[in-house]
Image (cartoon, rainbow, N blue to C red; front, top):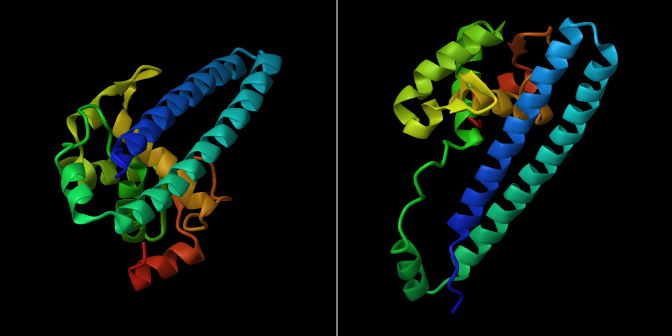
Length: 193
């Protein structure tokens, strides 16, 4: 009988993604300051670094999805005794944030209520209101890279990035604007979010 806990692996992926996101935030801050200070070479370096980090984050995200598939298959094949043992291992450890996927439906609902598009800050404010009862205390803690940026807000922004890659949100919307794509509108209409 295999005696592991796939939830620990999921927790590790979430922790790794959170750390990579914090690094991206830091590089973004450096790039922004460099650009404002007209140090364009350093801003260009930061942009390139952010691209590498985002590509890495996407690989980790894909591995996380692959892990969920592997864990689901393993769970289906477990006997009742192993399932009972796994349940007795306990819940997730404290400090694990709300998964990025939980922000998808609220984001789509908010954008729908705003006519299909809205300023990022307005969308995030409304998503935060919807998510507030579902969030864990750790989600309200600030990121090390930005004391004014709580974890939930960062996770919602990464969820937006994923939704753009999946085609649910427009990739070519103006800077600072989130907009639903035709695919996203269809997902809202059919309830497949």
